[in-house]
Length: 228
Ligand code: DC
Image (tube, rainbow, N blue to C red; front, top):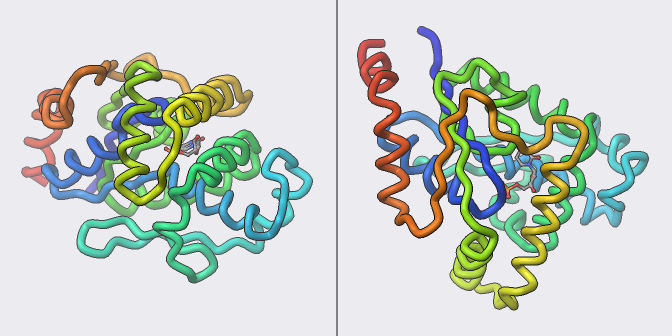
């Protein structure tokens, strides 16, 4: 039986992970947050006191890094060298470092290999930046989610407050703008809409509205999936 892959790409705070989780649940398949993998490598570099902008410092630790994903009650857990780092990778410091580290082709190739292997093993909804353009160019369906920078900053701010981090919204907006720049302008597999991806602007829309919009494009796949 072949697996199905649904790619959801877009910039930080566009609602990818929330939507990907809902869609995966509705389809009864797993969700893969690929950003969490970049975050885990960034966390390791931070803990080792390394500079994430320096490939010469980062590349040597890759072969010494054991990264794995597992699911517990539908929740994705990320293990770094055997330690569950799922919650530790959500800080603003790790967000910025992940964007820096994601520029390094060797980091990307290591993580893309794991992502492709998982997509061969399991039917997945994958959220990321380069899923439709680079990781799985033959994905069954591709979406590109966007929203204005102000709306994305507001969402991240609320998310962080919920997790107990109090931050200035203007700081978050600056961080998102920097990450957009970094993610869109890197040479290798930059953030870009695949030509065959469906563009959805989530500004002013509720989570339910966006999830319904995405699912309305998946009826053919859902039928196929049920037949398998
Ligand atoms: O989706 P996120 O905010 O958790 O991602 C963190 C960083 O990881 C993001 O700024 C860029 C990088 N990333 C990437 O380059 N490619 C992906 N497929 C996913 C994330």
